[in-house]
Image 1: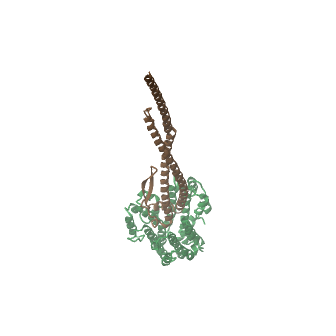
Image 2: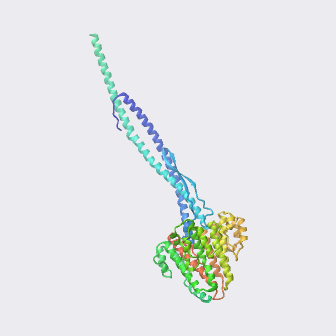
Image 3: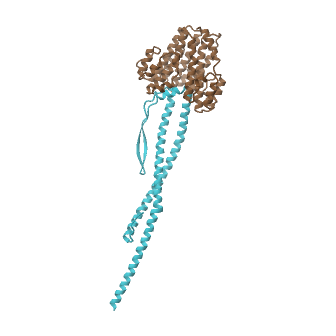
Length: 205
Length: 330
């Protein structure tokens, strides 16, 4: 913190105003940090739950795929996979969470699976489609966690800097300037008293 | 050459088939290299030498399978050869369904070529022409011009087109089965009938369970001259209740149950088991019978599918119990 220090009452008042502003900012940042921690905690919980479901689903899809491949051969799976000529359409929109822009995935269109695959493969295709939607949800949540965690780190650094460096230095400066100002006020007072006494003595002579 | 000679050769070929116990031993192997080594000891060695990946093993097994079918055509003559050619076109029909799907997905030619069974060795359509075709319409034109399959021009739905290919294939085989002078033609028709019945039932059951429109399902069913009439199947589908099928087709209950349990792949396994059981249960009094040729073809297909399944299961490191479920050994 570089400030050209002036040991004046006006500067002291200005410094006190600044300190109260910094303290308010600190309180706000502390609130933001707490809120971010809560958001992060709940997002991590949701992500953990989603991951368990996702892993189970992936396992199931891979098992079905392996079984179908074993029974019908790779040719059947490769050729059937070519039947899908549409793509899943998504839009990634920004969402503002406590000043952090996090991506929000909006699924615009999911290709219809029903009736497009041979009957013995349709079930697997439907499971894969469901899995893709879940993977997008997980990706959205992971990005959210990552961005909020990064912002939380920055906020924590700011809170700590305010708490441990800036506010104490302001307080120390205010204390020092206060002492100097008080000292100079006392000196002025004594000087005035002395002058007054000299003037009174001259008047009586 | 005479049918007698062909049947005798088939009896000889049968001895080369891998025994169920050996198949179970192969299924318990832990790596593709071990499988390739083990198969090298029997007559698969030359087809699998140099194979390293799953794709290469599958290709080698397909080569071996088709190579084992070709002598049957070389040894057959006259009506029997015509019937066998038509019957073996089932593998060509499989190739055509794969080509059609990949053409629809605009897959590159090399990718399509890689997955095909080498059916050109069994005669039939020149697949090179089909592979060079620009689009599905061009493929349909070539198939129509070959005269081997009857497919209507206005069919746009790919699944229906596949059904038309199979419908046309079975019509031809049934026609030749009744025209050709073959011994045990009753059993041959019955075998084809069961095969078609199972295929139709699978379509009906899965379509009902997946809530497909009955009208669309009707377009996928095939007329079965030796089984349940198409009209009756269509009526049953209209009723939209899979349990009616369970009641009506009690002899295929084990097959239909697999659809309800959701293990679709087991339907295919069960279908092959039913066919194998039928072939094993038919007691033919004489040593020389055409039926043995069809039995050998099916057993060869089962062996091919078992080995392919084992390779895939080893590749995916599936648990031993699952491996046994997917094998057709009885």
